[in-house]
Length: 162
Image (tube, rainbow, N blue to C red; front, top):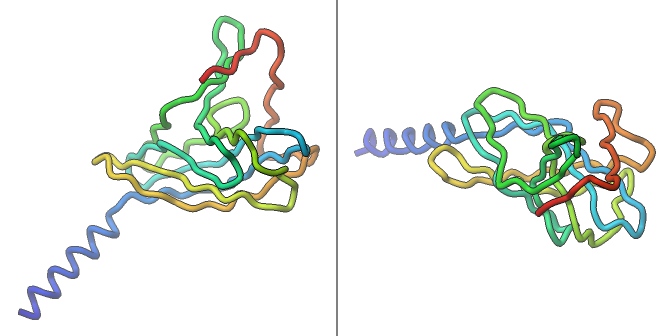
């Protein structure tokens, strides 16, 4: 009986270890001015097994969406995407001017030196959801982030679709 119990516990423990994990690196959020209602969150994601980022949540924003920016017919367009495919062992970068997280309907100004709690919602290949908590430091306005280029500002002719 003891051997059966130990074998069962080992099997459960092994399956828990086999679950997909995602390494999150260099997460940061762009600071805002007092009246600004949107900002972006950026990071690098590397999963241990194929996964998909399907949602992000944060208490600092009324709406959080995954977005992409892409050139279409010489026009830079930003739009919401339903998720981001993450290949096992490969790093996917969420960065200005590309895939990123939009924090909209901000409830407060985001100031340099603070951090923003983010809950990343992933789905594994079996469609089982799991979450990961991240505290992303806010980069002060004008301080930039040396490792990340600043995105182009929205100009006439640029679109932001939902």
